[in-house]
Image (cartoon, rainbow, N blue to C red; front, side, top):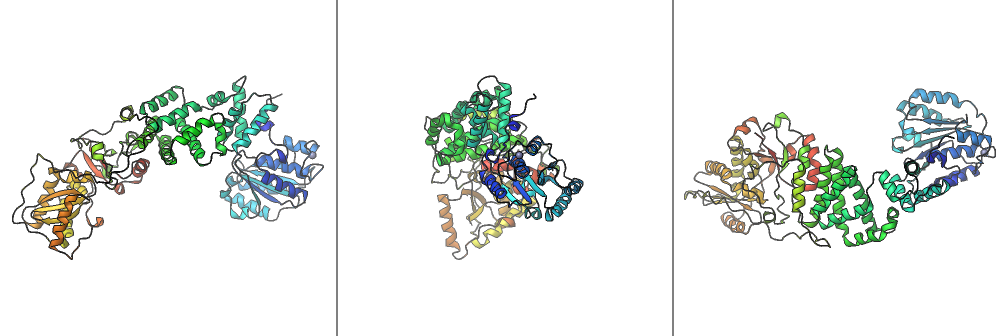
Length: 639
Ligand SMILES: [Zn+2]
């Protein structure tokens, strides 16, 4: 006799056999017993939850020679015909392949005929959401005035795609995702009946992997049976389904929370050498951390049944880490999984995600160089290109001054920052990151609290003496500051000093007088640039042009104590006139052009803003920016 797949052989035969849907089967049985059967039903729910099986039991219940009965005999000729699919009274239509109006018209033709052997003609239309609009309209006419001998059972996994007019004419039943506990129980029952040696742990893994669908669970059990002789235990199941062992998951999770970069990289290496997909690592680890999260929130959750054999270890991990830390890692890994799904080199995305998670937990936040994302960034279109092959790369520099993590000390910024090569794509950055990973002892060190004091402004470049202010320069009324600043930006724009302008336009003029123009910037990054000679020589020239005499611009970080002195000086000058913060839209935004590429202030990196990018670039950078947060973006100007 030909082998019958387990899911077909063990398809439920009675309403009582349908796993996890008693809220539906009991209602249907009651309707049959009290002769209150509707003429159209809609069964919706995830795949493998028993929709078609229930429809077929219902068909037998209606047509059994002893019926209509809530307990069909499954032995009479009618029942047997329905079970073997030979009955003329039960018509099964797969709407996925019979979705046209012609198919529905044919159906309507056959409806006229009375049932051949049973009491009712039952039409089961599976995946009904696949019907075309015309087919739905044709079906609607039938549903409006069905003959008394016809019952429709529509089944779908996507009820939201079914027109309201159809929905309103059906009695609707929603099939639930079957709990993994129920699936595991059924698997163990079937295994017992079939003389299959299935361990409890293995049944739980299969149940969890089936994700609420009984059919998938039985198919997977079938797969295990045909691939092994002997006991089907956890190892067999994990191996066959390409899953990763739980010991490995426990230790990888621990390595992340302990910040052990070398352990992480080695663990990834081992799994990939075993022939597993890099993405599987993230999916499995996410499932594991979800279990940790659920263990912290509700230790009796159904999902934890997969951890029956190592619940103590799970509880230990759940107790060691704070929920906030687990959320943080989950968020980073989910993002990494999204990136890995579209990345041509998913391994990098996986390694980067794991290392970033470890780093976030064990260090104050640092803006990382995104090696993998840089590789994915599409080439800029020619119209906005400032160079032949630009790449969008965030400069690794703190930009959020309000954070104040003392990044200047944490990450020394190289002097030749503008000419340093962009990050290379490949293993190197990841390995470097791994090497740089701290190795704290357990329990993990929580992230350092933000420093209360702001980053000290960088002093002007020491080797270039600032020009001496001219004695002729007189204090300027603060009401005019904004006007002066606008004029200066206009001059810089006209002179095509794009890099200077994009830095300067974010400044706030605090004081103009005694040959000085004091400007506050929100980031140390901007202050540093503003105080470089190749920046201020242009602003100073423009200021002198506007104000007459010699002026020198000096940048400070917002909140710097020195600014207080200048604020006082200003208020002494003009008490009533308080300058408004500069509205950004008034200042010309530099637009890269062909001329810009040849201009004198050109550097190896051109600032870019996310607003200036096209859809594709934004989409490519989006996931990265989500992780990195607020940062400056520069386009490398490769010659
Ligand atoms: Zn029967």
